[in-house]
Amino acid sequence: MSLKADYLKYTLHFRFEAGTSRGTLTEKTSYIIRICDDDDDPAIIGYGECGPLKGLSFDDRPDFEEKLDQYCAEFTELDLQLFSWNIPIILNQLISPAFPSILFGFETAMLDFLSGGNRLIRSSDFSAGQRSMPINGL
Image (cartoon, rainbow, N blue to C red):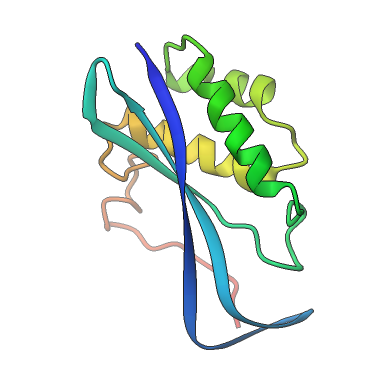
């Protein structure tokens, strides 16, 4: 298995100003991680989003994209067999906890890859549309 990771940078332009505790946002930059196996089946791609919020997220740092690029290169250099049980091990050894959105992006991309690239992180009643998710919102 020859897994490869890369990312796409994408800027969302809001149709309205989104208020936060530290001002308003009119756009948000996200980074979409893609994981695939070019040797086995390049059509199966796992996607995960790294979406730090400017001025709010712990990992909103000037070196964010540089670190993401580094982590993608390091992941690609590894000769990995990917299983659901070893994802936490890979994440703990590869990515610093100082970058929680990169951890989340890689975890969701790996889980999506394992599900065949079907945009399904975990099979559940919620993901099947059979159960709602209780929230505590305004």
